[in-house]
Image 1 (cartoon, helix red, strand yellow):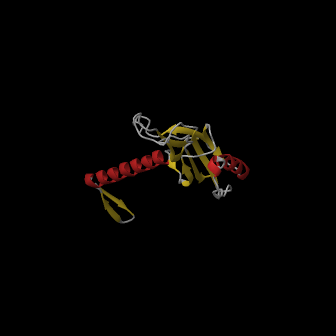
Image 2 (cartoon, one colour; image 1 turned 90 degrees about the horizontal axis):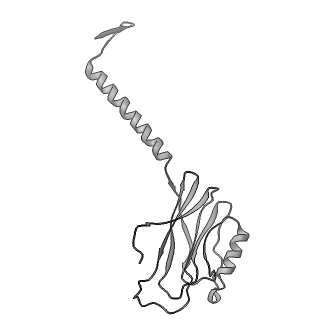
Image 3 (cartoon, helix red, strand yellow; image 1 turned 60 degrees about the horizontal axis):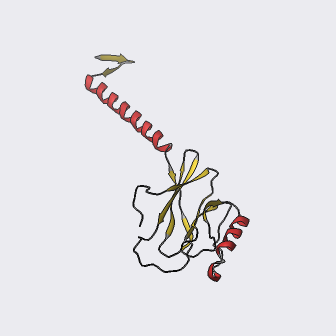
Length: 172
């Protein structure tokens, strides 16, 4: 097919049309893929503040702390364990918030709790926790423990939702 436009002759072939169609379909799929990814979960950076086996917080707790006053109150309760003398970790509450997870009092050592991921997903802040306990026949310290993990993450107004990381995996 030959088309004339202002003295310029354009020659169009089936191959040219197939190339344009292929490019158009490819660009459409790329845009669609980007839209799907944009609506997916956004992983937030985690800054570990303190993690261990001995906390003064004796009950199981999963909480988000958004103010310096609340953080000082939590830290004071935590620091009562065994004369904890560490200074309170610095957090800029204008930019960050603290996520904490505790397991409560355990009769032996070998228990661990860890915040392994935080994602902004839909209208929720999904906080992934990994918990492990010692096998029944394990040799552990015979002392009361209270495992805990405190992290700082970027400030968010999304509703926190604590979920178990790898729920199908066997516990340690």
